[in-house]
Structures are given as structure tokens and as C-alpha cells.
Image: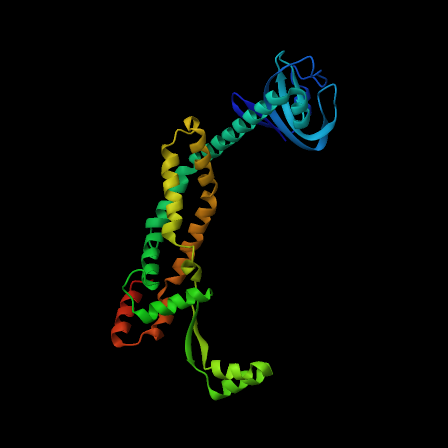
Length: 305
């Protein structure tokens, strides 16, 4: 692959023949007879390309296309360039690579900016639509106790499921004599007394929350939207071609995370909709410990589809 930095932007060329057929390209250039004017391109090939310097011609896979002060073009590798043109070549190569990265960032941001209308419509619909991110976030906050509106035993059951990491709803009860004896019999002899003392309680699974992904750490919808919406707003207002280098790099870095964040948003919202159904959440009713807690929980259930 060959990348040329032209006045019209980056030009990518697949064939080396397209380079050797360019007007002014010379496959043999005496490094002692010329001075470099600028680097105009870079290339990487699996097949090795002979160096264009007449004193070298060493085949290599990665190098640069250069223009001499006389207007001719040739190709040289990094080592040859440094050896024959010293600091001047190194400065040119750094400047070229910097310009390439900047232009790549601009092209990337323009591509994303052209998608902004579609992306913005989708994000807006996900956030504010029926059973959207805003609705889901409010009810997940209730289930996890960030909003004090559900009975503590029910919130604790949800938190326990989160700690388990699998969405299983469990209750703890005293182990029966038979259970203690079965476990003791299966234990290593050295651990027998320890097991007799500690295996007093057992856990029974009494439910399984569908859509548990929406509750998992790191999947907060507020945080995901907070990584998407400010970027969309900034990019919408940005004059990409005039951005300073630092801002260009920073905006491109955030932009590179846009598609993964959009996919996370879609995934978590889909999981939240599976989680927050009346039939699914009804499994938590058994954790209420009083009539008042049951009434409060039923009020929450009535808000679910």
C-alpha cells in the first residue's frame, strides 16, 4: 500500500507500477548529487522494493517517496535516508508522518461527521423513546438502591445478584442435618471438623433475572451516554480542517470509541428492556418482608410492561 499526501488529501495506491510510471520518477539517483526537497509518500509491501539510491538498491518492504530539489522523484528506505541525508531526512520523515496522521484524523472525523444526522436520531430515540435509556436508568436506580423508593430487602436481593455476577436470585437458609452430613462425608478428612463448624447455611436459587447485563458494573446508561453525546455535540460544531493538532488528536481518539459505545448503548438498552418486564421483576416479590413492602413493590411493578 502506498500513501501519498497531496493537495487534495491522502491518495492511496495499490500498484508500485503506478509510482514508477509517474513523470519524473527515477529508479537510480546519486545521493551525492542531489538534495532532498520533501517527502511526499510512504509505502509498505510484502514484496521487497529496491532502494532508488544508486549506491544502494537494497530491497526493502517499507520506505518513503521523496522529491529532490531538481524535481525528480525516487524511493528510499528509512536507514538509507538517515545514512545519506542525516538530520534533514529525519526531520522530513517526522514532519511527513505527522502530516499523514493529522490528515487521517481529519478524514476520519469528516466520515463520522457525515454520519451525525443518522447517529443523532438513533441516540435521541434510544434516550427518550418509549422504554428508552432514560426510563430504564430511572428504574435500575430504584432496583439498585440509588433511588430510595423500593424496600431494602428487595434492593439487597438485587445487589446480591450483582455481586454474584450471574443474575441469580438466592436465599440463605440453615442447612439440614442430612445436607451437613452429605457435605461432611464428601470432604477431605483433614477438613472435616472445619466443615462441620462452618457449613451451617446453604444458598438456594429461587430465581434468575433475564437482562442482567443492564445491572452489571460498567454498564451504566448515564455513563455510556456521557461518552457519546458530548462528542456528537463537539464534532457537530467543529471546523475540522482548522482544528489545532492537539484537539484533532483528542477528538479523533474519542471518535474512535464511538462505534463501540453505540453498540454498548444498544446492548444495554436491549438488556434493560428484557430486565424491566413485570413477569421478570415479579421474581423479587418473595423478598418483601411485610404488607407495606409488598404494596410498595407492587406499585413499582405496575409501571412495567
